[in-house]
Image (cartoon, rainbow, N blue to C red; front, top):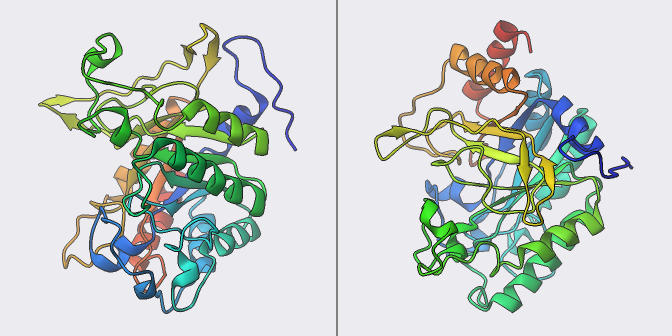
Length: 335
């Protein structure tokens, strides 16, 4: 276990230093959306229809390792609420699918076997859970599920949270308005309805060295959605919002809500496809090898990690065209 004692103000913790040395990781979006050609599921996909017939997570891990990646992050539960592990807290999981694979367990085992560290993505927004609107009940539900993930699957290097906007503002919009920080009239409640502080503390109680991220959304890369977090996110490169290119915030020192100066490194994430999940669209634009190398170089030049997304297909394998580009990028970029 890494000693994650508090460093001097504004300096990285030991856990952050170890995470930054990883540098390059694979983001993996896989779930019901893979089967429905959707980027955003509504929670009605039947668990009984989740059946990747040639699931080969060892192949995922082999591609990541050969591409030079040092860690990987799996979507354990996306916005549709479907869980890729047999959770005890909702029937909407792989436990009620035909083959009942514990995909989270297979993921951590195969990637560790390949020499990579593992992280887990968890959506705060849940479009299936029947008591989602009851903040107290749902906050307890989330902590119970995070308890499973951080107690049953060994050391987790990061927890990647998403979808916080759905309860942060009455409109449920992911796009941030700076006026919300000073004007309470819109009803902006940063993290309160999620009981974010308690969730963060619960994570560090279970695994002190697990770093916590909360997606800030594409229109303000590198910013903080709200404290506390351990890492900042920058979703997409050169994202354009309201006719303006959103430049990442590279500042690594931040003041938290208690006025304490904290070091917060940055993680870029981008996808090899137009959407995060694999889609049988019949046509796709793939980032070039040069683009992948540029993303990697940009991240490392700014002391940031790159988490590059791959969507395994409905058979349960990383598409060969994705693998070819990733391996060519490593040969060309030397990483």
